[in-house]
Length: 59
Image (cartoon, rainbow, N blue to C red):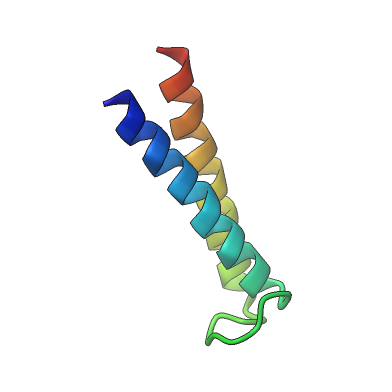
């Protein structure tokens, strides 16, 4: 179970990073590029992923 939580946490961090980069226009090629809403969604995803990873390492 802990490995699954770590997998989900790392996945959320990676996906959130991509969304943040697309939201600020650094990573082009998507309908999300340059739209600030994806920056905020990505930021929330990064925070959630960090929380999941933190919990998985605290156990």
